[in-house]
Image (cartoon, rainbow, N blue to C red; front, side, top):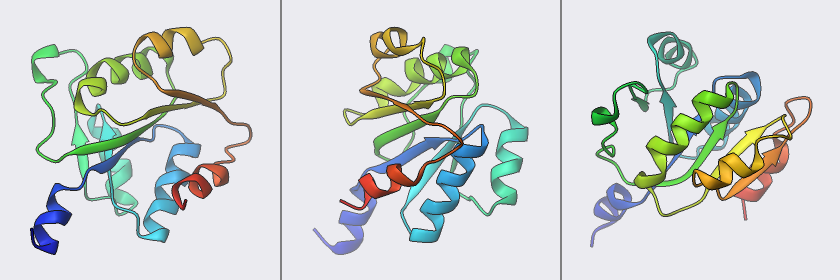
Amino acid sequence: MSDNEAARNRPYMLVSAPNQAGLQFIAELRRKGIDYYALVNNNSGKTRLEAMGVSRIITVDTADEKSWTPPAVPIGDIYLFEDSFNLSCRYLQICRPWTDKNIYVVTRREYSRLTYRALGANRLIHIHNNDIAFLLDDLQR
């Protein structure tokens, strides 16, 4: 397998960034040159990410289950930054079949652990003050 073929087949990180912590995470991924795709469910989210320079964006219609087909690229770890409990739960339902890798839900709330686990999250990460630096440290290992 050539280097180009291997690069095309490697799984991409997927990030849902509807809040400031998620946007900071994406900015740091870009700064460090880490490949990823962003996940959005509406045009305003897509426009906000495009304004940041994000070009790899997967848009899903969360209301249309028939549209939840896996993307054309392989998906690895998924980071879902919680802004809405309901949207995060829906993203878990959509994305869990897309990967056998870890799904991380990054939240400020304490009450949602069991629900997220039941929907397929591997790890619930609690943050305070949008501090995402430790997430990037984990990626560098």
